[in-house]
Length: 76
Image: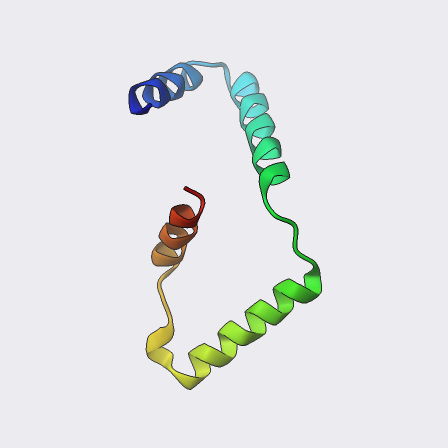
């Protein structure tokens, strides 16, 4: 799979900028359709709970990079 992904990446990098932009837009559109939908109220409740957790225990905070790594690991 990695070789195929690397080949696709290399080929995509050779596209003219407008075509690369179109490809990226299509891929992002497909990804966003596959994500579970959550209401604003649900997202707000999650954010509020997380903020309260960090206020209770500042050591519970994580870096932006750690957060992205966690999100990435959950998508596999």
